[in-house]
Each structure stands twice: as C-alpha cells, then as structure tokens.
Image 1 (cartoon, rainbow, N blue to C red):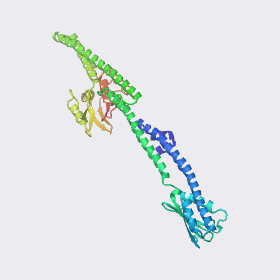
Image 2 (image 1 turned 45 degrees about the vertical axis):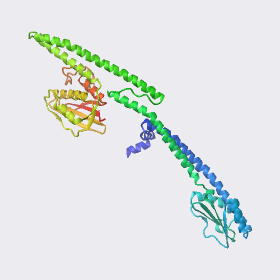
Image 3 (image 1 turned 180 degrees about the horizontal axis):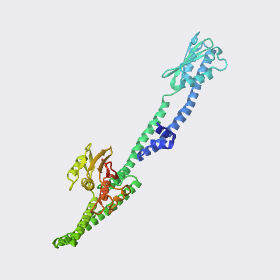
Image 4 (image 1 turned 60 degrees about the vertical axis):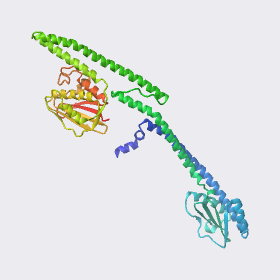
Length: 455
C-alpha cells in the first residue's frame, strides 16, 4: 500500500512505471495519442457545441410552428380541417383538436437531455404574454416515442390541441453515427499504422536478436538488410563489425594454437634427451621445468579452444552434470550432487564440459568435500558449486578472473598451470550468455555460482 502511495505522490515515476518499455509499444502510444486527442476535441466541439446549437434551433422552430397553429386555432377553432391541411402541407405537423377538453398532465413525460431542449423552446414560445398563470404557465404536455414527438396544448378553455411530428425533425439518428464513423475510421487507421510500424520495427528486433546471439558466441550468418534507410545502414555496419570481430577471434585462436603446437616439438625433443641422460639433480630439475612448460602449452590450447564457436544442443542438465561428476578424471574426494529437477537447457556441450570439469577438479584438489546444486527460475538455470576448502579472499575474487593471474596465498584455481583456469571458465560461461560469481560458501570454502539462460 505504501509503495502504491509513493507512486501516486510521484507522477513522473508513475508515468515511467505505466508506459510501455518496448519501442513498438511506445510507437503505438505516439500514434494513439493524437488520434484520441482528435476524438476528444471532435466530440466536444460537435456534440457539446455544434449539436447543442442545432438542437436549440430546431426546438425553437418546432415550438414556433406549434405556437402558430395554436394561435390559428384560438382565432378560428371551427376551421380545424383547413388548419390541419395547411399544417400538414407547410409544417409537416399532424394536428387534431379536441374541443371542451383539458389536460390531465402538464410538462414533460420524462427528464432527459432531449426533452430539456424542447421544454425550453415550448416555455419560451407558449408561455409568453397571455400564458395561463393558473397552472404556473405549463399548459402543455410533451411526450416522445422512438420516431414521433407528441405535444398537447390547452387552448384557453376551448379544448386541447394535439400536435404530432416526426422525431427526426428534432434529432436524427445519423447524428451519433458521426462519432461512430470517426471513431471507427480512427481505429482502422490506427490498426493500419500499427501494422506498418510493426513491419518497420521487425528488422530492428532481428538486429537485436542477432547481436545477442553473436555476443553469446553462436554461429551467425549475414544479417538480412531490410527496413528503412537507417535500419539498412545499421544492418550493414553490424555485418561489417561481425566480420571484423570473427576475423580477429580466428586470428587469435590460430596464433595461440600455432604457438602451442610449435612449442610441443622442442618440449618433446628435450624430454627425449633427458630420458636418455643419467639420473642427476640437474636433469630432475629440467624434467620438472619441462613438465611445467607442457602444462602451460596445454593451458594455451584449452584457452584457444574456449574461444572457438560451437553449436548449442538441448541437454537434460542434471543428467549431464551427473555424467561429468561420474567421469571426472583423478577424483580423490567425494562430490555430492542432489538435483531437484532435470530441465532441458540449451548449452554448448564441449565448452560446458570443459568449464565444469575445471571447477570440479580444482574444488576436489583443495577441499575434502564438494557440493553441487541446481537453482531454477523461469529464465535461468544456476549451477552452484560449494566446497569446504580454503576459499579465495574477497579482495582477490575479481583478480582471479584475469588471464595469467595466479594466487598463492590460500588457494590457486590453476595450480601448476598458467593462471588461465578461471579465465577459461568465465569465457565459457559468457559464451552461453551467462555470468559467474564467486562468494563465501556456507561450508566454509568457496562458492562458485554459474548462471545460464534456459533458452
């Protein structure tokens, strides 16, 4: 309730909350607002001003005709047939005179806006000089049906004059049709304009989807150039940018793979030479250095593979995680996995395998126990890896993502390697359009949270 009151007290914030956030929704608002304003102005001018003026003039004309016929009957009540003929011919009034009769009801049959115009006009036309003051001046009775108007008037104790005329002389049924037609036309124009606007926005949505897919590392062909001139220009620029980035990534991958491959040959040669040399302290140290160099080369190759493109596949994520845990090489300590569900998630299988294997191996190396759990939402799938190891200090949790950074004080996630462990993991997660977060585990060690989109 307090949140609602805060929104009411802050109109700008309320407007931001209620207005649509999409470009298509805002474009529809831009189209609809002037149409609504036109309808409001038209309704006010036509119905509140123009229609009121017309009704007042028509009521005055009808009341004047009735007053003229009444005056004619008062002067010569015996010539009623001639009066009836003339009233029908020149005024389109059906007239009947009932002599020696009086009205039982006075005024209007009901109280409504259309009766009000006729009452004002009849009061002005009939209740002028010489009006019957004994009845307060109201010596007529007005009633309307679906297509007729009936007016009964007392004629100075001579009888009752009954006048009927078509209702369309006062108010035509076509009058409301003006607003109906204008509203229908506005809605039709709005529908056509929204369809055109949707077609113009569709290329922009496709461009946004292509940029999102490209940012996740998916294979993407040439974006179709369509739409308005500015959108075509934007699509061309995106295609050029995509080609440049892909070329840069390909060149970097090729360079890392080539360097790593070329380094393997002299390393292998030196290992063979050391194998045939006699066992000495120096040769043992050289063998350890060569082993370290080989680990570095493997790290470079793994990093290069992590930048390569890979297609996504729908995988039951809990079953796949369990398979990775069961086949984890060199597992020494227990890894507990208790999934609550087994949803299907779109992942890059090999990249995901490399990412989770790297995390589990490091957790298994430094902790006595590791826990893996899943947390599902409508849009994301969180994989949480907890352990009871030494963890990583909070001030160094961002630095460990930097390539070639190695931590020696408490726990090194890439011991014996090049410092590319978490860099490879983060690249793999980002390639899926996800994110990674390090935190303190409730078991005392490190918590790694991997968030992947479910589609």
